[in-house]
Length: 241
Image 1 (cartoon, rainbow, N blue to C red):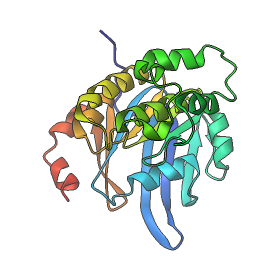
Image 2 (tube, rainbow, N blue to C red):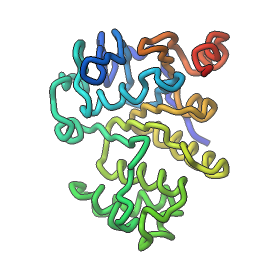
Image 3 (tube, rainbow, N blue to C red):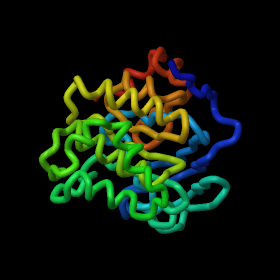
Image 4 (cartoon, helix red, strand yellow):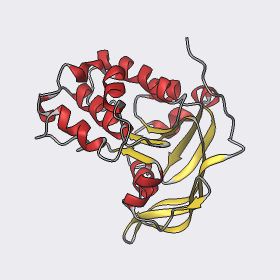
């Protein structure tokens, strides 16, 4: 039905994370993190709560500053660039929480996402991917179900035409019956752009991803092709509470 992109450690990374240290003020969370994100396909970042996954995402998008190391995106050093410049370069971000404008309608949320998109068909293409949103266009986003809010957040991020999309817990609070739908959409999306997905739902993450990194206490503890990580006996040790 579809053809997945297959990668070991990518030879030509689209995003290079090199010797990265980051955190919150004096509280260091990430220690000497090295990762390579290919220009197409999914990469999963796994780990128990507090391992540093969200900190990593916020550092990539620029919400947090790095204290050491490099971030190179499409050949450009972005480690000291502001968030808005990283977005213009092609980095999209769907945060774990507060990912939609609750008081705005679905239509207006999408319009915000498409503000700088010159493709007049872009919103229609998002609605084709997430047809449930087409039935809710005039509904306030805050009244949507958890799954619909996640679809809206992903769709709005896609309207920014990202080359790299960061997804932090895209199925948190989502009914099990909708998780499969979101998974299939992400698999399709990963054929065209780079995805980095942080997800507690292990099966979803390793279906979307070709490659996976496991963080433990802010350090990369395991990495490898997703199929190998799934079968690694060490995985459950690093995911256990």
